Length: 186
Length: 159
Image 1 (cartoon, rainbow over the protein chains, first blue to last red):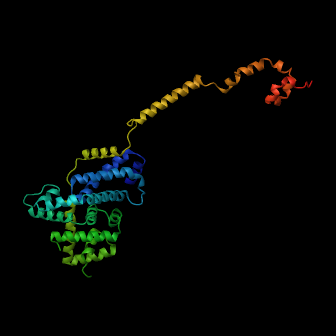
Image 2 (tube, rainbow over the protein chains, first blue to last red):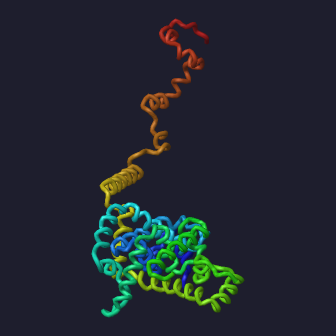
Image 3 (cartoon, rainbow over the protein chains, first blue to last red):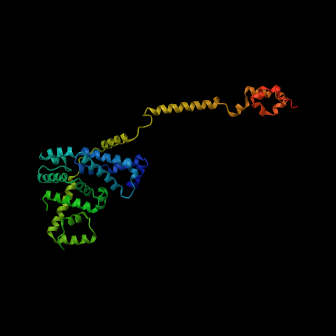
């Protein structure tokens, strides 16, 4: 039987390197995906998700088991991503302005999975609009959308974001409302 | 039933409502084209986001190698990598050797000290019979008095 995340975290706190490797295997992709959804930059997402795993290694002993391990770890990733955005806001805004002036750049920065048929221009335009709109959401709204895509419940999102479930719903409702307007779906 | 607002429909699509509300909304959406289209639009948006937010591919081997480097930078230096560690080890070894040498031959034990009395004591011990002839030595306290020592010849004969 595979050990649970919580058991592995306890072992990491006791210095078990193999347990840490297992947690990395389980969470590296999720951590990277969450970081990328919030930062929209592959290099930054790699850095932030790795930093989150390093943080996990350092503070595994503080995991009290009150929440699920995944929730606890997502909080680390989201907080680091939010912090990264705050620290690099001036730099990002400089390049966002330039990129928004260049047609087609957004879809290149946010490649959709799989091949995009050349004649599917409508879909590509729609994706460009949606992802550009996601870029313009507030950090909290984008974090809520990211965690929704990851399949977290409202209660888990509240734990990760450190706010009430009602606040999570407000972030989600506003984000989805904004994105629907962008997609022309009212 | 009144038309649900967008927030209620979002919660409905996300499955974030209770069983009673869900049953009521399901019944309403089944008969209301406008709300059904709206719910379908929300679901389509979430599906689109899920597909569109797949990040660029990552080489996980290189990712983990970079992670290991970051971890190594955090760890304290390994043994032997700082200047004072070999020095302290050499000092400890030297001290250990000195202790061993002293234990084997250097420091006399207490019994050995007692077995070799100082020279003055040896002389006294060799002639105990002489000491027994001086009755004045029975009053040892007088010996501590320098004046008495200086006038021993003038002392009255107690015998």
